Length: 465
Image 1: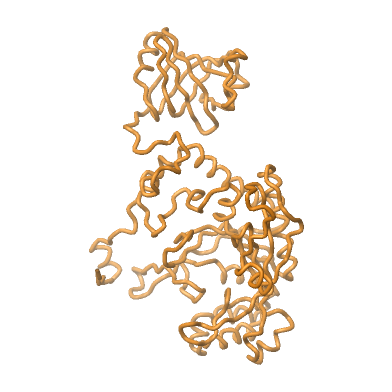
Image 2 (image 1 turned 30 degrees about the vertical axis):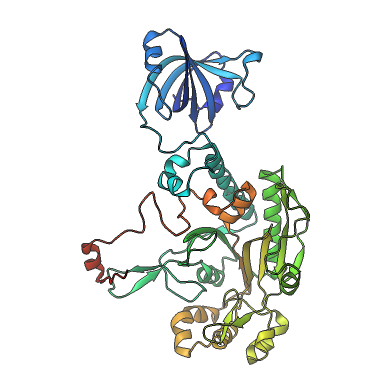
């Protein structure tokens, strides 16, 4: 039976079977040393001159070969302990060796943090790039963060629900990715920019507290630290006010940091609240970096930004558009203005953003749960009755059937992990990200359709240079 490297500390003097990767080999004549790595850690293995066949096989080993090794767990003398390794107080005296798979010459080195290697090379060999210690740690911590989110919410009576990936295209601020239907020629599904409408419909369904680790898709022009697909912690709650949602999220983030990142310090608890107007006037943006010392990598300055304008002028059409999403409710004192469609530029929304060290890590709002209020928002945006019915009829009908007041938020998992791990961009905390220009170099995507696929979908492609 296989023993993990982390388990050897309880097996001193015993023979064990280890399986993993050879990280390096050091030949000292009669003695050969390798570092063996598995998912739990790394340990030094010593090959003595005897058994001769085992020693001979060890001379052939190279980096990243996959092996099964039998050996005796030995406690190293105090003066031979490797303090830089977690299991450096132990070594394995090899008794048997089987090569499970060889590795060709490495396309990129993995014994560094990888920052000196071009992004194109790292993305092309991503499965290999993930073997480096920094990337492995990022993936493990990402999993722990998501687990912490799940536990926190489940303990507070939230229900995890998966919502559809194939849905309907509706205006939500960005272009949709479309999926042609073979069964219904000329029609398409849309990949969700967020589960916004589904999660509100779950409130209509009476679930009251929902969450999901949601995959989201937005067909945006390549810029900065955006990805065509990303992950958010989607949440919605019934019978809540703004403060209720903010309290849940704030408590969750504080517990996350104190549990998984005890070496980091939260600058201020409870998180300060800054109005949109104050943020723009003082910081010149709506995601203020309020750190007292920006040179301290362990300092986390969370804050809430509130009191956003509901509408802004659309530069292209000259009409009104929403600043965040059309489903937000106005602040109660502005409901009359919304219903009368007057003083539109002065209406403030219930939107709230959570910001960390100058990055927006989540946004949400209390929603319009009354159909007549949602309709007024769409009318202000210039939607015709036909368009309203076509795009939002299902929401309006649902809200007529006992929809509770509700609100939610969607913290971005990728960005939160990026900041907590001290990484410069979200590609470093996503297992298989796209490049900055939206390509998957490992899988060579996007790729061409075959003629057969196009024929089945009844699609013709007009290629332009």
